Image 1 (cartoon, rainbow over the protein chains, first blue to last red):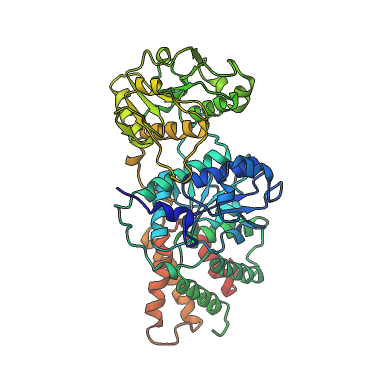
Image 2 (cartoon, rainbow over the protein chains, first blue to last red):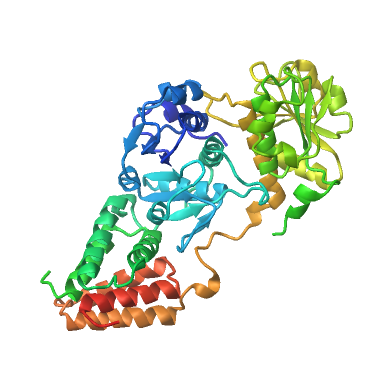
Length: 257
Length: 257
């Protein structure tokens, strides 16, 4: 076992380790601790969705022990959807997958799947929710799977920096183990649709369903949004498959194609 | 996979997970963070050697998020030798084994050896040094091996709480024997639709597409059949998800549901 070329982990512009996406993080200190944990494990793509106290943050810089100054600039987004628009494999860290059928990973098996996806050329991300409340259901719905760290069930609450550390640590350990070739994927990475492309289909489908009075009862739309995203997203659709689904919708509503 | 009886991790007086020994820890906050990380991973035997700011510590209690109140009393010693006097297998966490020939473990292989020792009835401990200076040579000399966590060599410094978390995390994963855990599934087996149930949906969809003149060109039907089966089938749909898809088709073609 020799491992990844470590220099590349810090230096290369083209490095495609998974992104860490912190959604609605409250405290700058926790963002800084997350950045430190990331760089400890060779990760440098930190993305923030609506950080409560704004960005940049002096507290984050201080708590990062120099990590933030050695990483590319943190990117800030207003929605989770934008933050993962370029990603093809996304894991949501949450203790409780709700209403949704998603593959459930632990930190180690999640790192293995993410490593394989990256080897296949996919862009990947881990989603983390706010300190006390965690991820919203709509954020979880965007993800291809759920990651739950096995911890003492009687005392399982981790702070944000520690959660990022464990996910990043497992990813790094896996990345050092280059002897295991990745298993084949169902498609070339470039063919797998990005979240953005998939969202275009979901939104179109929802528009059509709205027009056809599908959402009669309150709450049905929310539940439907999640079910469709969970089902299609889990399969990591290719661009061609999404084109086919567009064609199916067009045919069913009676449009010329 | 059975693993440790989880209830015992918190309750039993006789529980013999490894002790965590913090030598010359400076900040109460770090002791508290270490306690929290320990209990996250089912460990409850915390020992301190000459904590700089004394013991007990309000800062430690606050930072432990309740962990210190749920663990047996922390024991305080004046020398490392006393702190590990009852132990039969001790690993010293340090980046640099100096002047000494000791087996070198990473966090995972260290946890495996420690787990084996505990299974054999031995008492075990991890030694951690002071925040900036680490363990003294005399402390390392007491240990049976050295534990070094593989991290980004360009940015490898962990704070004390994070170091304890990674050692304890690996021990806990080993105690759960997660390598033998079944691969992740997104749903209970009974909820996953049978091929027959899925075929009912595919056939219905194809009938509707036929009626809507989707299959104009020769060969399009075959290709479409494969694409839809491949996409939906790959996701292993649940019965509920297939019901939703039926509802979507009904809505799009304008039927009452």
